[in-house]
Image (tube, rainbow, N blue to C red; front, side, top):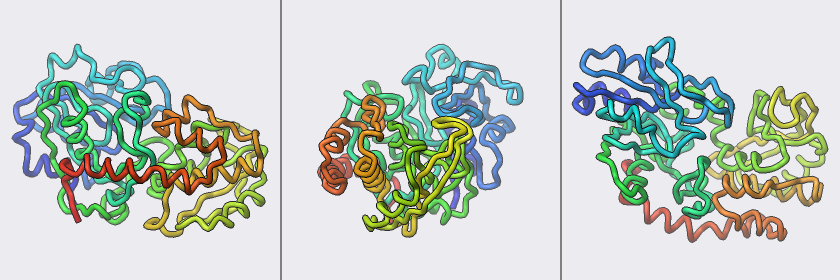
Length: 363
């Protein structure tokens, strides 16, 4: 399989030849040989790389979740670096005057202002599944989620770019997507032959990415999602949870593709830093059957039923992550988790119809 970076330099250099380029990237911006896309652009005599843009965690991946990253001049690349996280929902205007083309190498919520060329990497948890509610647009638009897509959208970065550009931008850009070669929609990242590069400090493995679409909801609660441990998002808990009891409750649910093991951990930072937390490790035993969003609802409901009001859902943040208030409101009425998940089906079916014209890969 060839990523969009490799395809660009092997076959589509015409898109950037002789142009001043602004590049949106992060540590995942590497080719099959782990060579940085920044270095590939800088070393090519026919392309002038003039600016870098970083999403959450920054261009070098050296910022923690939610951390503000100010403008700076990169000492190694000798390029200005602009942050796209927590500051604006579009590229900064000033440096765009000197840019002919904006290249983006991975999944961000922005599709450019001048000419935007999206270079593909595959969706690490396949493009075969969709799950969760579709974000209520524009009421719940934020840096967490901008447009009406579900938590697990099943699209690639380029497909999202095509969808957003066609359906949601007031002034669509001249967008060209450089596709990957040899990717199947049903392929998991560890089936591609590409090296895994952590996209953020708390996304160390494909296993983390597999549970993340659901477990990210824990950010909107008073539970630890185990940031500051070696298994973020796979571990979860709180100082007031008995892991033995909770694992028994969760395994009794028989969730497809999931098993739970008693676990104890003390995060080095973030929630409950330095405190011993009881909880579980979520083990995915069958990732084809596993449904992360439904599983996390089941986890939250089991904890609420065992520990009552000690579990807190922070309404504003939880609803932003979920993209709607309806899930939290149903949860607070003690609607069973599987019935809540069933309410997503109509929206997912409509989303599938909406994005169908913009798909680039079909099995």
